Length: 234
Length: 234
DNA sequence: GCAAAAGTGTTAGAAGTACACCCATGA
DNA sequence: TCATGGGTGTACTTCTAACACTTTTGC
Image 1 (cartoon, each protein chain N blue to C red):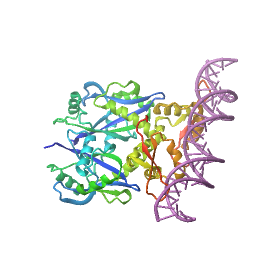
Image 2 (tube, chains in turn cyan, red, orange, blue):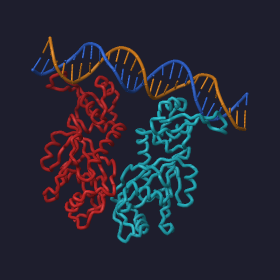
Image 3 (cartoon, rainbow over the protein chains, first blue to last red):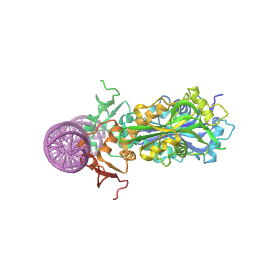
Image 4 (cartoon, chains in turn cyan, orange, yellow, red):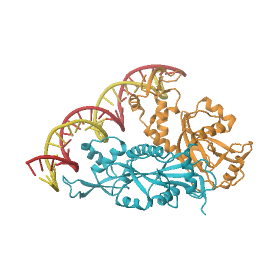
């Protein structure tokens, strides 16, 4: 039997861009035998194991609850209010889910964050795991303090992307058009960059390189594709 | 007896500016009865209580180990490597310090950060508590992974101050000169702002207001004092 | 007067903003 | 040929960087 740490958990906030809006990945709050204990949704997250690094725990939990692997996540904040388990049904659910014998007193959770795009692969994953993408503007009430965690995650993304715009490329397909990139930036920053000047801004980004390919089958002038270049050499 | 959570701790990285350099506040790794168990230094930090918010724990621990109160700290990262207690003497020290009976398995620590100035009050505090300001460039080896935590704290400060330069005013006295502010910015950012252009930059900061006072008793032209203005109205 | 640091002015170039206009494509 | 969105060019403003010079103070 694996040794569970009953005081520390990880939660994963996956923010996915579907081409138009930001979405959050949430799961049903159900027990391990499959029966749904509460009608609530929650973030993918769980208590950690005793001998497990936090980063490893986040990866494991995400895989167990959503099937997703190799998602690059970064830690963004710990949530440790003494009354995080204020809702009794949340505490009871946790104890049952983990088959714990003793009463859970309080849990500090380390929240992780990832930015990614919602592609076809992401859609098919939903069926097996009861994981759902929900637009951030239409988020239902979540268990624990997960609604607060989502809000702080989005705030955190805004700050992070100001310092490091490259993060945003996780939200786009390998090949993307200028307006797709602009749309992502507008969505995340909440601002509205002028479309007419955006090409000049593009030219100043050394990590964005134009390709010779163009869109096909669109009912207007075909847009050029770009790709993200990680290193400095061609 | 107060109930201790044996899995979660807080650590405080206080960065103090003495007018020239950035310093970190460190304490001796000694036991509660006063005998020094190891020769090492560490950050002020401790396990949390079971019914204590993380933010409250950080304030309590800082007061207990350094006597400082009402220091504004912000959480900046959780450190949760499974082998943080790899050094056996650190684990033993912790168990003795907290009078714990069972063996400590692993601890996740939530690191807090503060920027402040080292004034006369800060100096006198040292004698009672064995807390010392040490320049970040001359840091001795610290217990646990505290050296890593300090490094990440400084990195974090750089990022935070880019987004919110107002943070830096905690490092200065109420009245400060332009070159003091410039010196702080240079120290924290690692850059070197041109002194000649700095006044123009000052004029664009709505939250810095010039005073009519000037320096006295300096052997060169007296510099004007400025103050920090928090709100938008005069 | 001299040293030392405060503070101002000028200029050139880079970067951001607004907006007019042309281009390619499907219907 | 029209609607739609892609893309370029020009002019204007604002920000930044480099650097020369003047001012105030104690010795």
